[in-house]
Image (cartoon, rainbow, N blue to C red; front, side, top):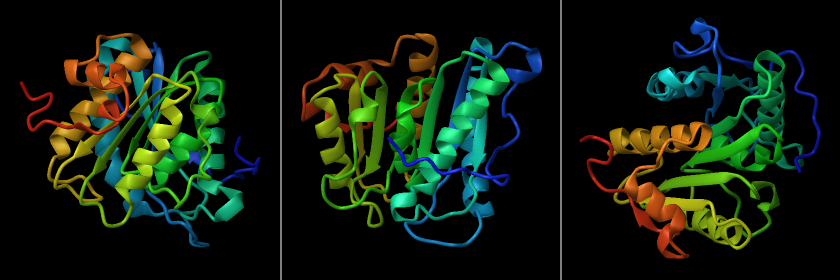
Length: 247
């Protein structure tokens, strides 16, 4: 579990994205965690926050009929900062705040870059039923914990040409997690880099399909269902097909 760190007054949920909340029926929440940095004392990055708002909006719109609301988490600062694991602590605080606001609803943590690491680390919170980590930044070695992923559905998507966050590290984490949790899959986005821009539409369609299937029991798209069911390494090196979700 993450070391307990009080987030303080500057960690907060961004404004609810999507129509679900305005209709008074919230049945599930996607918490979107922006990118961060390994070490930093600077405040939260407005650019990182803005860069994931469109992802939150697309996911929320896809789940509008199910009562999905998305929030982008506003961190206290942009640094993970070693043992403090500040971004993960902020993610845990955000899950608790969702429960306070909406009651007993399932939560999917969806993180990008260092936010992907925060999503994976904070998965042990009771309300979390699933995690989507996009190009997660992970430290070298196998010290990153995976026990908190037990009982959660886990999706990792990583560009094969990522020069900022080593894709082999996310494969190794997924491989360790899969040993005790069959509901783990990982997609490789061939030729894409850290920002997953070349196949942005396919990645976002994959995330939306995963979030809706995990929170509301919708049938997963066939490639996603196959990846979850496949033994390693097949389900952990699943290629994301061009055009996924587009037809």
